[in-house]
Length: 589
View (spheres, rainbow, N blue to C red):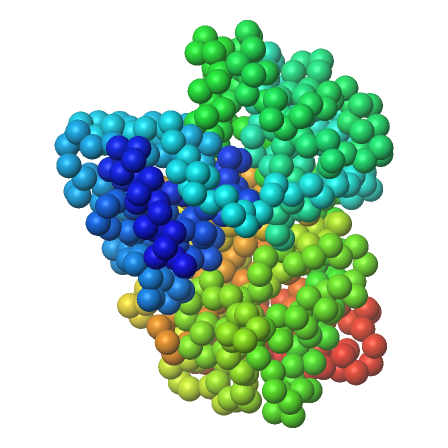
């Protein structure tokens, strides 16, 4: 099937006089997770990861992805005409670099206008122009050949995120945005990112798996705002909610002509706005800049943090029951990784305010855990045995918060190698958690805290140490996080109220994977001008995997204090048997 589709695409390239096409894993809103309608890269290549780029020429079909998908990508592309290219720390190859090295001068490269951001198109054009290679955005070749069985755009109805959870009204949020607009001297702000629109309007939807967002565009003006959305999504309650805030509702496909008609200064983020829409803006009105609500929502309010803390209690209770279930049934019945994914969702679903999982749970038994974004599926996952180790990375969406937690548990007596790796990861986790840092410190500066214990033993991991987390929104939420290099995440200064993951790891391909993840919020330190982290996640860390000889007294104290708090906060919500189970897991180390 993949080979047939690729052959059809190559015929379209030839007919259109195109020498190469670059296909991103994206939608017109620059989303990480997207509606099935936009999964063009998956359709043409078969790759199901959340990060990747495809390049197709008459004689080469390649897919590039980062270290999270080195194992998964090669496995999924096996038996297809596609070649997997490693990006990042292992291989510096990128799709753009490959095009420069392999496409002849005077060639034409196609980039579908609504699938690439304006900044991305400009970057490709500038780099390829040095070799006299032209970028064409006039063709949508995948849509041309993907007609049969292509999913329609979703039309699920929106719902209001109740003010008791949202904490800040739609009017107040629009007022905050307008204050920033006024300071920048713009009359309009074009917002294209789905989570920023959902946050601004206190609305949620079901258009995208795991993330409670909906397909829409938003233009905020000083007195009126315009929401571009399919009519089928609007309930009478939502219409009234928007009308009360003077938000005019217009059809989703009318955004282009309305943007073209703007005559006053308009703020737009070229790193998020797709090239097709950006090109509609009259040149004289464009003011490039950051998406305002992205930075507003990154700093959680005291009310939101209080709700998140409550969601963490519910999530911890669900995990107690899930891991108890695993212990009770392992060895007495067949349990696959996918079975445990189902149990995690089941026990979370028993909690008040549960909406769904925040991402596809990563449950990796032994060697499967060495792929950081491994996704077990029924019929394609390993059976968990009462030996070795199990990595579980999962999260829930609740009306009062989004969770994301990773734990590794021992299913039998661990080897010295695994205990050393686990302990070094834990030391890095504790080091980042305990960090005190001056105002203005970036996530990239703190990333080394989590890696230093591993580096001392010649070990490292290929992914970032942490990402921002939304508030009943996307589990991966920019702008902040902890990561190496000069990415925007690494270079964003941390502010009080920013909510992120702390998840160092270590992986031995085909043997095991280790990651320990909690969610932390930045808050002011006792010393003026300094900041610190407060850990919000509540679930025990497996102490049977720890090599005590590698731990300092301060680290052991941190672990004991953490377990005391976990037990104190979760135990009032548990009956006697699960309470006793939790007490055993939280015993002093």
